[in-house]
Length: 602
Image (cartoon, rainbow, N blue to C red; front, side, top):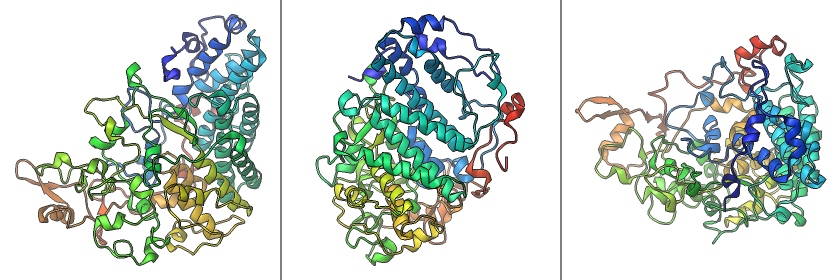
């Protein structure tokens, strides 16, 4: 039973949520002292429940029309939506209002309100601390999102009211904020139960708090290292140790193996319940039976808002036969172009468990053995409705469950893995390599490859891949530079579509990669007829009236799909240092002059 969504959201929790202290007077509707003094474990739990849908994105909130955490990758060079993403193009502008931004303090105030008052409850101390641990987790998660977005932000220890001295305080250094986050997470880790003891993968647990600590410390440690800030090594040590803690046998985690190596990775992401899955530390649940379904499988397959993997990402998958990059393996279809199906064959097995092939068989998914239908281009052909729609030709199959494909909306049962053991292994490897410590490759990277039957092992001194050198020219870690690059490759492949790639580019100071041409596949003349290939070459098609119109796409000179060239007249740009942070909403700077100046370039 999907308990977290079935439990009614507490009216009390809403009552305690006050409007943003910066521009409205808090107006509590009940006596908080009275509530906390009489609150039992159920009441404390319900208070926490209100924060789950607000801060845990997963596959999006029920009833919404979006791709959930996948949309974070729209900002990056991994997933290219049909309609260009302003952030990946560097076309974002400074917002006027805080609505829809991370500059919202309601959740921080709710957390601080709880932490200020929960000890008044007469519940036993273990129960009180457990729910305080959940609240600390949420506070740290929200603050981490703010630091990634704005850098320096004000740190608030207590809930504010109209007479608080901190009402108009300025921003604290991100160093101060991250130190406070780590301190709070350490307390949460102490108070929360292990996942295996609690048995509730859908509730915050010690394992999830350790994983969040590892994620935050890796992000901030590498951000400081590659942006020339102090304190990088200490945070990388924290990341390495937190990941190492979760790798201990007593936590009971292992990689999900599925029905076979050829399906294990794909099957991991089409499950409706992760309670017994040893890889999932924490998940978000969905249940259409109670009106809490998601829309992810339908949106991927129907293609009303088409998406696709970029060629840049697709080219990262190694050759299965040689273990080498495809630019060096010499295989037909890899190093030299033959057919699209050949390009996808004999690659790291995760490739065809992540995207679909036009070749009929177990990896064709919703393509149904047909050529990818490129939105707005190949749309009027007879039988086109049988094709899968993709913006790039690399049709994404991750999170697509054919048994959930339906014309009805929000019927998806797929739960969303928020923290999984694979990420823990990647953190251990990357932090270790950056520090010059043992990345434990056989327990980390090579274990991920072994899960899918990829026998090419990563060594401590891998061969140099010119593609990776071009992407990551500056490596500051103490370990082998090519090893660090290969771990970054592994992270890109393993965590595809889980919303981490944009943050990775920011922390590695690799934002300039967003200026690279946004390429799709090379259209294959064995899949498309002469008229269809002409559309790709000329960028012109014919509408229902017989009029020639722009097709919306064309080809680059090397034959790859130019997804945006006809439709986006302003090229992608990345301004350093401007685009490494976002602008504080302008109205907030007017309300609180102590927040000025805005971030560099804004």
